[in-house]
Amino acid sequence: MTKRIVAYTRLKPIHLDQLRQRFHVDYFEALKSTDDPDFRQALGQAHGLVGSSFVIAPELLEHAPQLEAVATISVGYDNYPVEALTRRGILLCNTPDVLTETTADTGFLLIMATARRAIELAELVKRGDWTASIGEPHFGTDVHGKTLGMVGFGRIGAGVARRGALGFGMRVLYACSSPKPALEQELSAVRCELNELLSQADFVCVTVPLTAETTHLIGRHEFGLMKPSAIFVNIARGKVVDEAALIAALETGEIHAAGLDVFEQEPLSPESPLPHMANVVALPHVGSATHETRDAMAQRAVDNITLALEGKRPLSLVNEAAWRGKTP
Image (cartoon, rainbow, N blue to C red; front, side, top):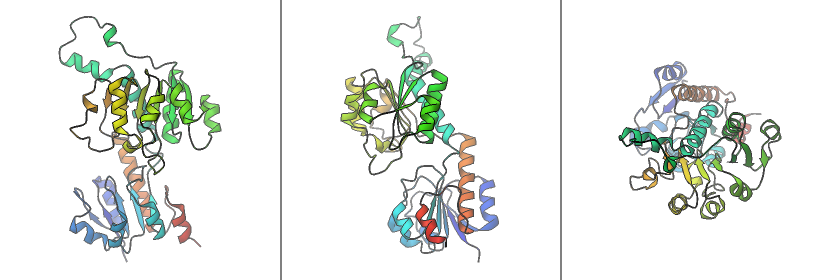
């Protein structure tokens, strides 16, 4: 019997062809909602699910009695009910590693662009308002030699810190649930409590995954601990930060500026003041958005779902317990 896959995101022909060589593929290139009746009907016969962006609620699994594996084209998996999947023995796969360096590039881009006011000053030139030599009102902030505080120190956090320490001579502090002795040796990084990090860092960069414990990890209290000169950068998930508290901290001068690639609501609401604030650089969640990296992520997802449906261990498995339940 040929197994069936539901793909609910745009895939390049090369990736679709790889899947179609082994499986029957129901392809929803422009899915608007998981309530789509055709999508739900296809789920009823699906053994595999490949996609991104949409929340897969636990109740949706009721429509997929044959589902064996899910491959998300992302490193984050907060859109998926991990416990419900594991209880049903459904493997959940993601795409770490292949996007690490690109996302770290984006993090450091935000550090640089925010510190040197790159977007604000580029717009000044575009408007034709550069009519005299730039003076102190338009000066930025140095990055080299400053203290970089990493909230989260996994692959991406380490990538950002490596750029700071080795490229810009930055002192690195990190707050993480477990020590990272190899990174401490490589980067002279120092592990400390979150409150201490916030009070010492010139740049605070958040890279933690979104979990129940990290939701609104950074809020009014945390912004109050930061230096008035501090620059805050978030490349994790929008809900890690209390956005109302961030806006208040920026408006009152409690912190100096922010570089943001993620938001509590995405796409960002037109009513949000954040993109209109001179001390904010706001990007539309582009952390991994390069041609090379998105191709690599899609390929990893294809490889993951193929291995899983052939009874082999996927390259990137989130819920090990589900795999242990399948192996003797």
